[in-house]
Structure formats: C-alpha cells, structure tokens
Image (cartoon, rainbow, N blue to C red; front, side, top):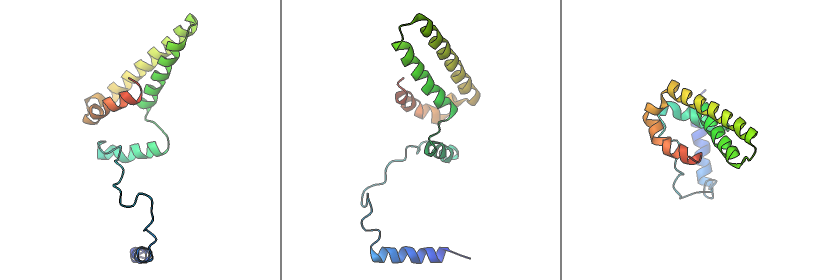
Length: 123
C-alpha cells in the first residue's frame, strides 16, 4: 500500500487551511548545521550520539582531562595533588593512544574541528 498519495493530500489540506502559517521561525533561515563539515559517513552517527547526550570516547576523555586540570589547580593538599596528577597523566596517555589508533590527527575533519574542540574544552 502506497501512503505517499495520502500523505501528500493531508499536507495539501493543511496548507490550504493555514495550519502552517504560524509556525515558529517562519520566514527565517534554517539554523546552521553544527555538523556540516563532518564527513558524510560520520555525520549521522555523531548526530545520534549528540541527540542521546553521548560523547565519543576521545571527547569524554578530553572532558575528564579538563576537569582534572581544574581540580589540580584548586587543590592545596599535596597528597590529593599527586593523586590528581597521576589520573591526569593516565587520561592524557589514553587520549594520545586513542588518537594514534584512530589516526584522527591525520584526517581533514579533525584538523578542521581541532580549534573548536579545544576551545569548547578550554584548551
């Protein structure tokens, strides 16, 4: 059964009755797509992750690094500083291993987004 014809008829009736006349944003340009420069084969995956409030592993590690750096900067206890420094070292090593494994630093998408990513995470 083809629903295309039924859908088209419903849309036409809605247009004629003015159902679409007072929609928010009518007459304004569409918002820019944040993922416009992400390669096509990755764009939908990233959009799904973003909508699910999930981060790729490397971005979660980057976020953890920023948090640990902030904790380290605010900490006065030498024992806790040592603990935070150890965790920070581990996270940086893990991040670098991930980057090597995925060879993201060699892709055009990473180079294009690297500045925005670093600014977002405070680097």
